[in-house]
Structures are given as C-alpha cells and as structure tokens.
Image 1 (cartoon, rainbow over the protein chains, first blue to last red):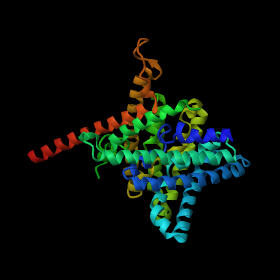
Image 2: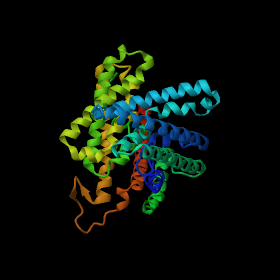
Image 3: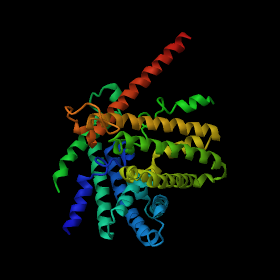
Image 4: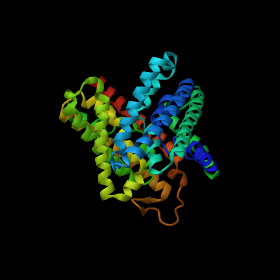
Length: 191
Length: 207
C-alpha cells in the first residue's frame, strides 16, 4: 500500500507533469485563462488519461510484447488514444448531451496531446504492473488538474495587474509558471 | 507565392516556438545541454519537412473526414524511423531524450503545418515551409539550450567556458529557470517583431 501511495504522491506533486516534466504545456497555457474552463479541462484530462493508459497498458503487455512488436509502441498508442477519444466523444454525445455540452469541446483538444501520450509511454518503460499503472495515471491527471487550476487562479488576478507591454499574454504566464514550478521544487525532499 | 518568403517566415517572423507558441514541451524539457537541444531541433526539422512533403503529395487521395488520423499515422511512421535510427547510431542521445522523442508525434506544430500548408499547396512550397519552420524551431532549441547550459552549468558542448571560479546558477538548469527564460525570450521576440512592423509602416508612408 505504502509503495502505491508514494507513487501517487510522486506523480501528483514531486514529478508534477506540467511543472517539472513540462508535459501538456499547450493546454496548460491555452486553457488557463479562465478558471471554470480549467476545472472542466482538468476533469476531462484526468479521466481520459486514466482510461487510455489502462487500454494502452493492456495493448502493450498483451499484444505488442508477446508478438515482439515493441517498436510499434508510438504509432499504436497514438492511434489507440485518438480513436478512443473519438469513441468517447460519440458515446457521451449520445448518452448525456448535458455532459457533452460541458466537456465535449475539450475532448478533441486532448486527443493528440503530449500528456495523454506520455503517461502510457512512461508507464510501460518503467514496467509498472496493472495497479501501479492505474495509480500512476490518476496521479498524473490530478497533478495536471492541480497545476492548471493554480495557474488559472493566478492568471485571473494577472488580468488586473499592470504588466509591461511586451510581457503581456503568454510571456508573463511563463514567468508565473516558473514561480509555481519553483514552489513545486520544494516538494522534492518529501520522499 | 514568393518562395523565399515561404522559406524565411518560419525563422523569425513566424518562429514556431516563440511567436506561434506551438509545441512548447521540448523547449523546456530537453534544453539542459546544447547537444540534446540540437538533436531535438534536428529531429523536428527532419520530421516536419518529411511530413510536409508526404502530405502535400498524398492529400488529394485522402477523404477530408479522415485526414487528421492519416496525417498522424504519417507523422508517427516518420518519428518511429528517427527513433530507430537514433537508437542504433546514438544510443546515449536516445536515452537522454527519452519520452520526449515519442512525443514528437503529437507536437502541434507538425500537425498544424500539415493542415494549414501542406494540404493546400504543392510539393515545393510545402517542402520549403517545412525547412523554414524546422530551422526556426532548431534555432529556438539552440538559443534556449545555449543560455541554459552556459549559465546553469558553465559549459558549452560540455567544454568549460568560465573556468573553475564560476559558480553555476543552478536555477537555470532546473525547471523554473527554463520557464522564466522562455517567458523573457518571447517578450524579446515580441519587441523585435513590433519594431520591424513599425519600420515597415514608416517605409510605406514614405514610399
């Protein structure tokens, strides 16, 4: 149990995917202008990462490894995730139009995103077992959501700040992200 | 269309990294040393050029509805080739780039160029656009890794620059330094582009 907890905390705080591994930055800077949107995005990313990592893990350990096709890892994961997200979108649209109106637009954005692809890749390179794999995926997703929500809260305040002209927009967001990342470095001594 | 313009716009004016702000992950993750940064830059350069060329040849054969999956499969194939090549000839670099090499597949810049340029233009324009964007991206990688390696480690290509007395500013080698540095470089590009724009307007008024 302890090992799983360590893995989880590690994925959320110490090796935070956005602030120390730099994954999912496009969404991180694109969506964090608005707090509501970033809560939605965080939720969507966490669920997509968890589900697609489970699928990718099964595909890799049950199909690719027995057939010695490990070199097809990248291409098969990308296709798997893209088609899975597309399927998810169709199902949600059919089953729950309300949910679709709320999260639907984020789904296509995450279909081809680095954070969604990187979690399964890291998971299979580290030879995680099935449970570790799930714990790691949930941790990665929540870590992303946490960073996104923190960033969105900062940026909503930044709108009222007097920022020098050339730094407005993305540049100042980068500087703020640097400071958040500095804060997250403090977690590195935890385990 | 002016071919020279197509080639050069990716370098400063529409620099894929600092101006279009696409595919930000690699610029922070692999730029702790110049060698890693340049390898990543050249990989993207090759992939974007090859993909643009392939897409511009095959785009007429593809049904519009499935074009994105087809482009992604195309990119993934090229990236897998590069991965196997690096694994065979430069295993150390392959290890250093790690997961980020897999992620070249989903770099927004490559898909964006395939969608906005290669699927609408001929082979020559697409090829030149890929070359220009690739060079712009490589320059960005070089610039960031150059500053980070010199300040954060006191070295350039692994050679000591300042001598023994230099105390490396560790923050530049760590994630926070990378974020802040890129923020300031982006601001610099903004100032430069505005300056060029102003010059151009002034000339227009005089002419």
